[in-house]
Image (cartoon, rainbow, N blue to C red):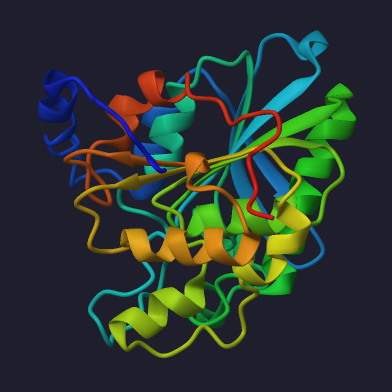
Length: 282
């Protein structure tokens, strides 16, 4: 059965508050403020320049925690595409700065926080129907390769929020050094997701559910908000069926929705590491 997590009410109250967004600073400056004290990074890959932040305090620990951002501001309305997918509230970054591990990397998605020459390769495809395109997944993998080589990390733990959950799973399926996969409100089966809402399919995107067999051997934990109407429970359930994974890898967080209150809850949720050998259905 899926684990139904008890969460202290106080944290839910804190998380329900809107972030202190200053309308007079840019989204990039707001991210800098969240990640104050972290090293700002730009990873040059074949197609994109990826923005990131890193806190490496114990490289001898040999494990790197990687947080991948959600889809950001893909659309201004249901039909109007945004000109800049940079998130107004970078939930994965807020989680990353609260993560207890000594070595943490945050990666923005292609074209987020990209200005001027750093918008190389950017076109709306990569935050709409091609948001999980093979070249976007390859760029994230290349960025991780760069920092792993720099510090000689032996394994990575992948964490992804929303669409970043899809990307974390797709990255995990293509690496040999992944020690665990954790998603929060993750789009783990985008075909089930778009079908549920009657939206256009993400026809230029890879689907994590199609890599289910490759992912079965990786320790996993998937958090879903009980009140999440943006990425409802059925999306994770569809992925688990495809992967033949037990629902013991699934944790339903009471009263949480798609944005509330993952960052505030993260210090507690981070203790729930994925099992070394996730149960599978034979």
